Image (cartoon, rainbow, N blue to C red; front, side, top):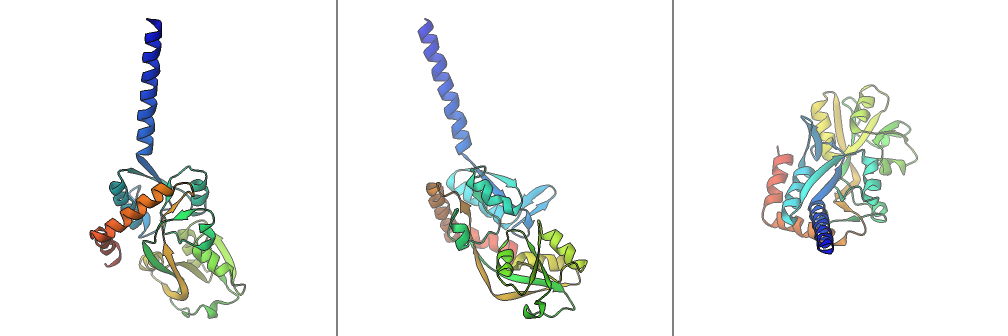
Length: 241
């Protein structure tokens, strides 16, 4: 009888392990930085935005529950590489440098870099030479302006901190992506924004280099959402108001 009981216990343990693993694999842990409205932002202690809703719809398509984790932007890719999260969606540009470390899906949004200044300031990047420019650490704007030695760069951990510095005249301008820049201008009278002509970029979802199967699934889901009209409906909800 003892050996039968032992076999029974072993089988039960294996079943419990399999159930737990199945539950774990059915959840997609998504890293983001909710400082980038309208793509991701906090509303009543909940992370919302275009990226979040898009990721939830992708989750439905591939049969996974989406769990959103908030973290600093510059910590997103390290968390992905150490497999603490499964994917990153954060208005992240699929740059060549980032592609060396992680994989990206096909792009889901085309943006460009904008510069925010006080309303009475000239809308000209050249006019800002020699002045201090605020950027968010790790953002594409950081990479863009840091490559131009005519400007002094002040790095911040969040866009809101950079905006406060601009309003207090601690920096002369802030570089941010187009839609978030427009959002901050709407919320902060006295600021204006203009586009940088060579600042176009493609947003994509980042995954670990090992996760090729999930990459294919997400790409298929994205294509399906575009084909069935769901993507367009979501786009109009956030960007055509």
